[in-house]
Length: 459
Image 1 (tube, rainbow, N blue to C red):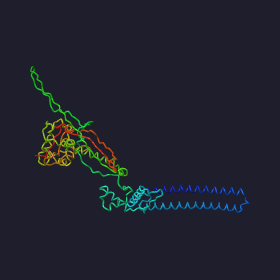
Image 2 (tube, helix red, strand yellow):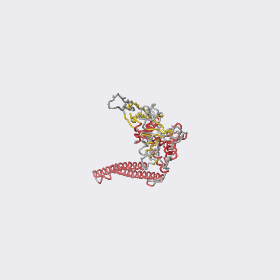
Image 3 (cartoon, helix red, strand yellow):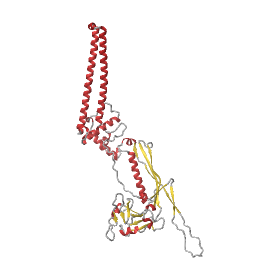
Image 4 (spheres, rainbow, N blue to C red):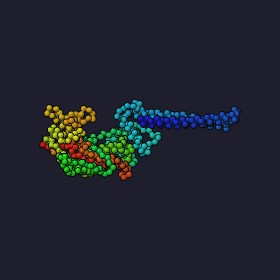
């Protein structure tokens, strides 16, 4: 308890000072008594009645008596101060409803917080002295509670937009530089909103490069060949052609800022919190671009290519669901078998959480659910023998939508990482704020258009 610690320190200082004072007086008294004995021995017993000697002895005796009285007075002062300080401790414990300084209720907790708050404010204003003792009656608990409420409101909007009463309450915690003290009751825990995203980053193939783009050789042609007789001529056959696909990288950035005082005084690690928030935002932006990105200043997504047939590069097969507005079991089976066998070994379903809920109700001809839940932690659910991966960036089920993708996304999509998250801490450009300029460079595109197919909601 801070108050008890301060009181004990004050008592220790007083006892030490008292010991030093008493020691000095004792030495002085011994010196005076020694002088009396030496003087008496020098002049002899008969000279004690002498006028001058008598006066000197009386003066020495009076000095000794005064020093003795000073010691008694000092002892009394120390005892009185200790009694006052003990009474202050008892008063704090009484208001806190916590005997011995342990346990207690909300009222006592507020008194303690208000005392801490006032001590901090006095310290920042240079008013806190070594002998300052704060008592419960020295603080206004109602005023502190009003400041707490105003502080919470100031976290949500600028101070100038607070009501007059809220601004007045905030001024209670104002230091000479115009800053505000953080109430001691602010939690060091932050409740964070949960965002859903897509697992394309996890499923795709990754390349790490040191330039601004990567070029991948594309082999979509085949060699010419033919049947011949034993003695027939062998004319030249066609040579397969190799193409190149270029995937550039693009930049994501963020530049949040916080005041220097907030970074120094907040009850949580603000820099770590901002770092985590920016990293999570970058991850969601990447995932969204890998699904719906148009390729302009961002990666190109799997849903942005036109409908086509297997074998036609630059197009992705779209298999009708069999219903104008909904998914159907037949449509999912057709989508599954639209892929070549090579891609089935590592295939996954990709759909929104709401679409998974619709698919869970589908049954086969034996009235058995075609969806199987994952029975182990971390294991995806199974649909027609393949894992279902929830992707919040996929469209909802609706007429003309593409709510389901199926295939081998590692073979079909490549993510290019040029630069991981880099943060530049800038305390100079926007004083008194510290800016955290954060950036990442990443690219992505479909490289094998036969590796997956899409379900289009259509009759």
